[in-house]
Image 1 (cartoon, rainbow, N blue to C red):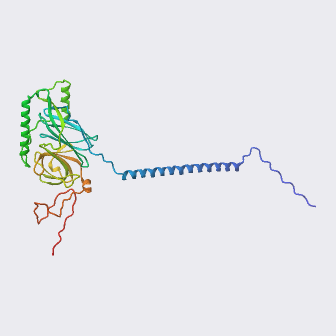
Image 2: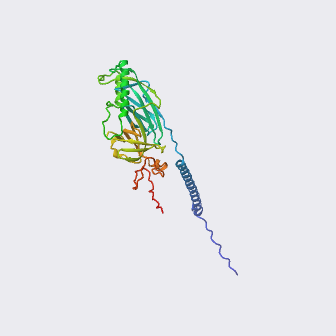
Length: 365
């Protein structure tokens, strides 16, 4: 007789017992979804940064390869004008041009070389004499472009202590013209001589103060000042002056003689003679002639000679022309000897801003 096994006891789950497995599975699923979202966000952020960087590099590459825009040189004036006041024959010359341009201003009896500001503004004063005369202003840009304007300044009416009868005025004007012509004839490239006697300049700033004081009725020492109304009209470029101006790059310095090459038209060369009375300025300070060297850019104003000018004033333009020379070198050696040159058995070295090869003679059989 078989005995049946006893029934298995029923296990009744305890009430409120936590279900562990489903909760863990839900947490894992939520964590996985969160991680996936964070991964997607990270990938999108990296992709956005990559796109932004590639565009930035592309734009920079475009900017570096783009041709820079060069603004043509211009020259305009606020003074002299049709209503200009001269004090002891000195007038204000002011206007606008390209930023960093070199301005050469000169009359028959005075000269000034300045640089325009970063805004292109320039201002100086110039002695023209009580009876006026021609004034020429030449602007040279950093690239060597030039712009020139010529004015003829003449008396309009007279103020203060400068009353001159018409007959005497004509006589004085003739005397000044004759003296200027004689000065042009006598000036030669010598190393000795006396500097010219010119009136003491007060400068543009002081000049404007004196003119303003007169117009407002303020007290000034009229016994020492001669204020005169002057009229300036545009004159022909062919108007003759007792002074000339040149600018360019120094290609040779030999003693007191400087050879310049035009910054753009390299076949144009100028001879600038100097003496102990030549004033040389650089960055607003007076320097010696020994400072000048090949490669420097200069502007010079002086008296014309047969083959150049005798400089009264030389201004060193900031920056060397090395880069310009590399692009447009100046030839310093020529296979064909120039007229008047004397062959020499001993080769001589010439200081030049552009390095040149040394020619090795080929022996003949």
